[in-house]
Length: 247
Image 1 (tube, rainbow, N blue to C red):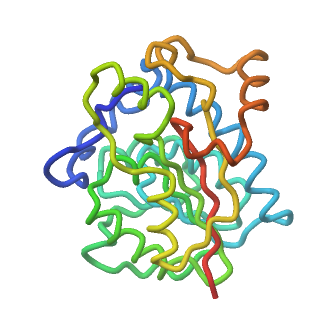
Image 2 (image 1 turned 45 degrees about the vertical axis):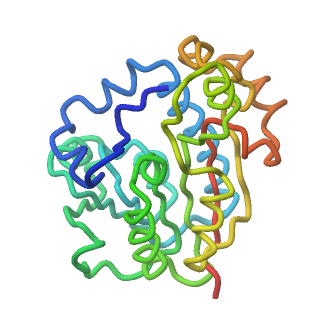
């Protein structure tokens, strides 16, 4: 799995400002990144209609990037809005989803008149962002997701994933800091209760295995089904969390 999106120092806000032209190609080149994208699509296409059988009124994709997740979820919403700080990412997003409103803004530094939402998503953000930024963003999202609404997010940089544990046991240095339990605690601090966790790739226990998967097939889907119980989320390299905003 690529760590090129992470930032050990500095501000994660600036890491993707000029990456809109090549971001999707970069994900497609990295085997496990491509695999995660495919599996996240599969799961979201089941999760969202289960939460909103009749569709949702208002949907926000926070840190939407090139609209990879927006494209999946927006068809279930009457109104969809994507927010990002990167103009180059938003240019790609507008091409991908011309019917969606995209807003260039840093909601942690200046409020935007967006209203409240029944559903928000935030993918490939929390695992990469520094701890202070995670707190700031969750504070913002707590004000944007209405009580009883849902936030769907992922953690694709779990230091307790089986492959990461094995990597450290064989002399590798730790590169990630957001555990599954740690993310749940952060969400709870800001009024979100995790109601479901969907692990991805829990069966991948060696770093080299992450470089060998690329697209989903019958075999990988069977393994995901076998290792897809939420109890395995703490040791999965990627997990989708569904969190409900408390009243």
